[in-house]
Image (cartoon, rainbow, N blue to C red; front, side, top):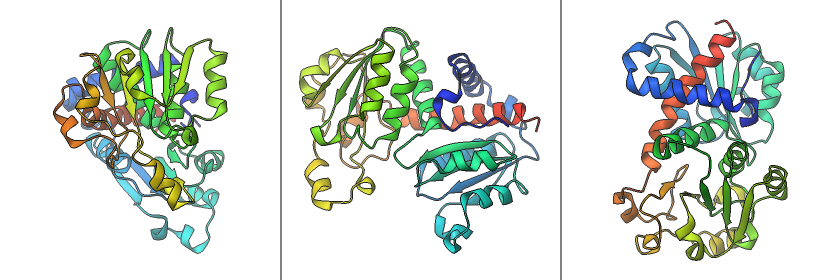
Length: 305
């Protein structure tokens, strides 16, 4: 059974094919309106979500399918002590495909090992978020037309940011990518991510000074400092306002810069930036629905459902 737990579960060719399908869905939505008639998606959200959950649900509905599931662990039998493995065994009786978000790293992998239906990792703790990565890749392709040769800046929480880790992993498979890693010392990217960049022979640099590197960037990927990943409230409050992006801060940026953010935004991007044509994050959120439609179709087809 084919699952998507990590972005590396997909080849670059498969990613290109998913992007091609998503672009065709955008161009010809009526052609896909009945592709999943009679099929059910189980949306298993053990952790709060707005964009990911609603985009999965919208994706399935727009393919003509149905959605079952829950939006909070407290509304599932996990509140009674049921294991992830038992939950997915049960869900397989009722659904054709499942999307799981869980606060524990590795939970979707455990589910996939016991599942008779395709499992999509919709985010597991600070680990992976492959469908957000697919969303980011579709957005970059639609905004830039290519991946090779881009200078991509990641700014904010690079330590706990699962979207950052997944996107760096995905982009590292393309040619001549340069990474600029912008964060406070306390929130630097984990060593295993830097090791991956080095293994691929790609250029990167780390800095605490976003202003000094702004003119170099083709992509600025902003992240929020995630309160839920901190055990110390004082440390969170000290770091949360480290890199607020304002129109003033963008004066030295390229006219062709694309600003991405996986959302939700707290205050790290000023609302005034929303009117800048370089702000892509709401288009990015919409792209998430289309790439998830493409992924659902692919996994159901490969499962023979």
